Image (cartoon, rainbow, N blue to C red; front, top):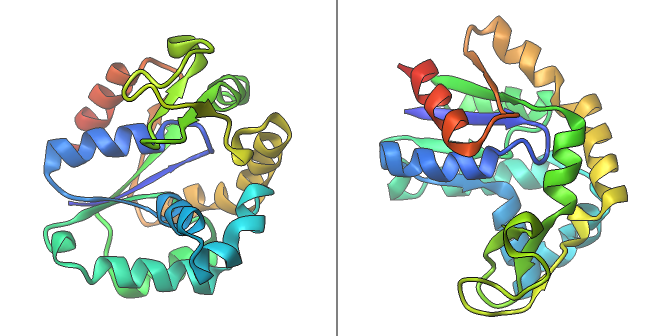
Length: 205
């Protein structure tokens, strides 16, 4: 199974991708996670992409594609994968089509006001990198390890609005791109996590 998770920032791509990895026993490949890991470790790549990501922009195609090519070459991708956050533009999708053939593209549809609530309320743990929402944890510490929780720069309200605008201009055209290939599966992601997951599994049958 080769899947792409498509949808605006905060639509639940990462959450659903994690559940699908357990369902199908294939890896979730998040370019955002790869970039953030490099940023934390201060690698040359991390330094290169830090200011772009924190402003809500998109990392240049050539860098992102190179990282994806490297990741897909690893053994755990032989039986399939779930792309989370890639491709994010038509040029990336065209380059990806030359590498692999994707089975389905799950497009998560969600209202912008729901996204703003989800993202500006997200808190990340400085210790274990777990991600939680203030609706769950309030202003307390990490429920897993008691580490300090903070708001990532790309979850600040102004950055979220910028990311949504970037999505509308650059990423949303992918819905039409993959629709023409007959691969789009539309799922309402305004619902709770388990209902969204159930709808995805039904759509993929």
